[in-house]
Length: 178
Image (cartoon, rainbow, N blue to C red):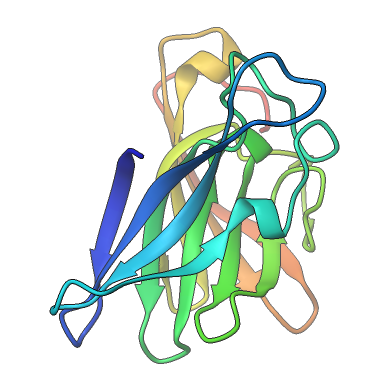
């Protein structure tokens, strides 16, 4: 297994994104999903969330050369006791209840729970994000739009009405709406 990103909880526990590879009918190659593993200070490891419990290859996202979900960034909010996870290949960021492992919401992608003020269908090739005071800021790589430039985009999230309103965008080139 490969660890992709990590965050440290207030009690010292490390939470890491790790690959979870499985053999799946209809695929000749091993299919790689992701999981969040907590590693306590005594070395105890606990899987708290796994893509295989919530999604199905081919039904939720495509598999290319075995790469299925490709989660690449994680954050933790101690006040809500939730994880935020960037699931690159599904074009979304998800909010996960740490205690239950249930997905609270999905932003972007084919299964987004949010409506937007624009044409947001995917977060493109996002590689890092930050959630603070109801605003999510994400870094989008440029090669998703056949250009060398990248973007930083902020959305104000309304978790009651389930809307995501773009409030800021920086791009070093003229980009189509993502």
